[in-house]
Amino acid sequence: MPDPVPQKPVGPEDASASEAGTPSSAAAWTVGVDRALAELAAGEDVWAETDLAGRRELLERMHAATAAQAEAWVDAAAAYKHVPRDSPLIGEEWITGPYPVVTSLSALAATTKALEEGRSPVDRGAVRRAPGGRAAVRVLPHGIWDRLLLSGFSAEVWMPPGVDAKTVRRRAGLALRRPRETSGIGVVLGAGNITSIPILDVLYELYAHNRVVALKLNPVTDGLRAVFTQVLAPLIEIGAVRILTGGADVGAYLVNHPKVAHVHMTGSQATHDAIVYGPGVEGASRKAAGTPRIDKPVTSELGGVSPTIVVPGEWSDADLRFQAEHVVTQRLHNGGYNCCASQVVVVSSDWAQKDRFLAYLRAEFAAAPVRAAYYPGSDDRVAQAIASYPEAERIGERVLVADLDPENPGHALTTEYFAPVLGVLELPGRAGPFLAEAVKTANEQFAGTLGVNLIAHPRTIKELGATIDEAIAELRYGTVGLNVWTGVGFLTATASWGAFPGHTLDDVQSGIGIVHNALLLDGPERTVLRGPFRPLQRSILHGELSISPRPPWFVTNRTAASTGRLLTRFFASPRLTALPRVFASAIRG
Image (cartoon, rainbow, N blue to C red; front, side):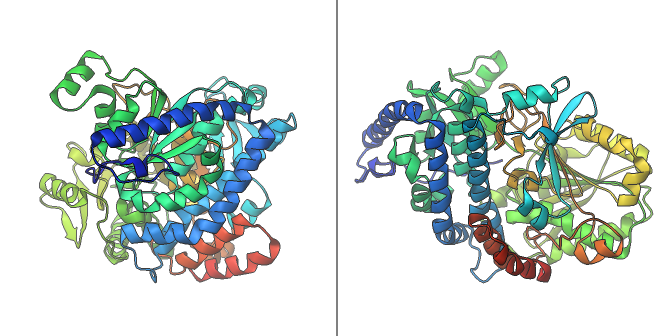
């Protein structure tokens, strides 16, 4: 995930949510940062004394604050992304901003409540066996409202081989099982693309790891500082959180500060390496020698080149078009500035319907709503893609590389463009052999391990049988989606989110560690999502157990703005009487 050029230095007024003043020099902002860290050191003692009931109450207060700030939050996000207020795309800001924060706060509060009462956050019936001797924990649906509003969608967190159900239940809770054993000050380097990320990362540092937090905002999101201050106010008041702004100089000062025990970042591999090893030639030399400059643990979420594997089958024309919309959403949601955006579609060269599907894909890619290239460096990355593929089709500000060479596919498989660039890679074979080759290619040739998408007709899934689960188990990705975009895993509070485990500082790929994970499971391997192949009207005709219309995160959804607002308000205050309006808006999408 690329990072923007720093925009301004921090001053004393930016050092915490409560300070004010006017910066006059570099020394002024360092004093402000030092003061914020000193306050966090004192706040750590308060956090240690805050019992589970107190921590749950803080979550409930933040839940109310998020609901109160939701409209202002969406307005601020739309302003810096240049999304018109009357655009359906405003729905993206609801669904990736206040919505996942509201649901995560509720889920974390439920986990904290279970631990208060001496229970495991994992229900006894929530664990089944998965391929490879794994325990799979059902995390979606996670209650009656999920069953109603996300009908047909499910999620499991698969644990590493050999971890049994008893161990899963016993260890769930992480640091909340020992609330007095705090772990110092953590720095969170906030993301600039999805506005819920900074808040969710702060919550995970505090509740999963018992670390108080200095949140350093990405300069792109400085306009959200006032909203974030209100949302995090309960934690700021007890000294458990401080919010800072500024450029790369502030980030470097923070991560190398002796009072800081841990760093978590969202960004690019290049920024990760600059933090860990230092910039330029010296940093490259340190990386080659395996001698990090930073002397503290670093966790990260860094994105990658997320493939979408389309398994051949016999589809209706409506299926072809709907799944083309699905793939285009995976690429163009949030303008293409998502760490889990699909950059390459993998299709079978032997699929009889390949040409028809690609025709729909090209049409939907061209027809999707026009977006401002708000994320810094986007135009340069688009230019890099065109330079690498001179034959690519330019569609406005978008680039479609429709015929990647399987023998020499080039940068599309190894460089995260973080821009509206989409490639198509063809591999031979019918369903089973094609899937096997696509899994091997995804594991061995694609950069990053954050997420991979599979699309397959229900009949094909039935014919393949256990082969589907075996393919999921073989894929080395932190989130695997079957007929659902992996971005839904990001939105699912109880799912784990992060790279496939096992990366190291010198080969970081999509990062180290996980976030979200509101059940606080100990050491998840991956999240596995499943969704409906067809929307409501056609799924019922085909006897499928789903009443989900076109999802509100689709870039083609006409009522995404109203549905996103209604979903956020519903989960802020769930009640049966609010459901009809949510359903009515969603069905019109």
